[in-house]
Each structure stands twice: as C-alpha cells, then as structure tokens.
Amino acid sequence: MRELIANFFDDAGRMGLFGLRGFRDAFRKPFEIPEIIVQLGSLGVRSTPLIALSGLAVGVVMSMHTRSSLERFGAEALIPNVLAIAMIKETGPLVTALLLAGRVGAGIGAELGGMRVTEQIDALESLAVDSFKYLVSTRVVACMIAQPLLTTVFNFMAISGGFLAETMLSGISFELYFQRAFSSVPFRDYIPATLKTAVFGFLIAAISSYLGYNARGGAEGVGRASTQSVVASSIILIIVDVILVRIIFFAFPEGS
Image 1 (tube, one colour):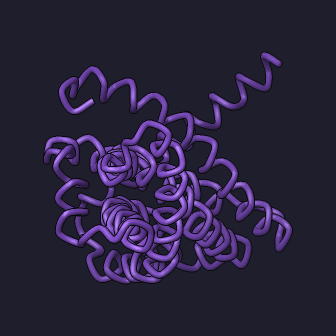
Image 2 (tube, rainbow, N blue to C red):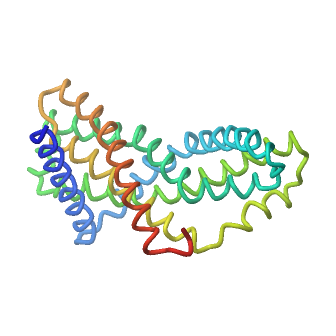
C-alpha cells in the first residue's frame, strides 16, 4: 500500500514538473503562435458542440430535479438562482473539465504517443526543432485558454436548458428567469471559478502530454497512453477540485 501511494505521488510530481516546464517554455522564443491557434481549434472549437449539448441536457435535468425538491417547500421561485449558483461555482467547471479530459485527453495521449512510437518526435529533433516546446507547450497553453471559454459555454447552455424546462412547466418569461438566475451571482463569483478552470486545463494537457510524450511499446503503448490519459486526468481533476474549493473558501470568503 505504501509503495502504491509513493508511486502515485512520484508520478504526480513528474507530471506536474513536466507541465510546468511546458508552461514555462511557452514564454521562450520562438513563440509558436500559429501552432497554438491550431491547437485552440482542435482542442477548443471542435469540443464546443459536445460541451454545448451536454450543458443543455444537464441544465434541463437539474432544473427538473430541483423543482421536484423545492416544490415541497413552495420555493419554486428559487430554481433559477439555485441552478445558476450550482453551475457557475462548481458543476459547470468540473463537468466541463471531465468532458474535456475524455475528449481532449485521449486525443493528446494517442496523438503524441503515436508520434513517439513512430519516431516522428525524433525526426523533429533531428531537424533542430524543439519537440517539447512545439508539441507540449502549445497544447498546455491552448488547453488553459480553451477551458475557461468552454466552461462559459457549458454554464450558459445549462442555464438556458433550465429556462426551457421551467418555461414549459411554469410559463416563466425569459427576462424574469435570467434576472432571478443572475441576481444571486455577483461578478466576484466568476473570478475563482475562472481561475480554477484554467488550472483544470493545465492539468488535462500536462497529464495527457506526459503520458503520450513518454509512451513506449508500439500500438499497445499508444492505446495504453490514451486510456491512462483519461483515467489519470479524471482522478486528479477530482482530487485537485476538492483542494481548490478549500483554497477558494479562504481566498474569497465573500464569494464562497
């Protein structure tokens, strides 16, 4: 058991240092702006339909469950407030991160793993290209930028899904619903949530890139890197989320 725990922290430390190096190298010349834009399209834009549809579905379901609970106390008017607070503060960031870990994490792990076992990374280095900076740093930066934007899309679609469910059940107007939804969510509540999503993006890219960049063993190694990227990212995201929530409680007591 001790050995298992020690290996976990050892691997976590290696992934963390790997990701920090990738983030640091992004600020060294030459700046790989074109590649970062390409990765933003691949990691962010192509993930938008999945995030939007998932947010809409989650919003509808949570609205219906919230209504069934609040109806017992005659507090149906609080449904928009409860849904907005839950989405913006916790549910939106974490669910978006887990969805992105499944889609993007597996893709990065498989892509970099395939490049490693087919010696494409070695070929880049033979051409005097900094493969780490070109392949890892660009993905870390792109994921850190895309994660807050995708979380915003998820939150908006979830709150909109709640409106669709509520307007069909109670006939509430668009203006009244969104006025109630955002009346209890001041702007200061967006700051810790946004900072947290950037950390999530860093973790997804760092873990997936580490496993893919260091893949070995041919096609089997590529598949293993892809699977481990999703599993490791999801587990560490949940653990880090608990830690970040505690930190936010201390750093932003009013927003908490």
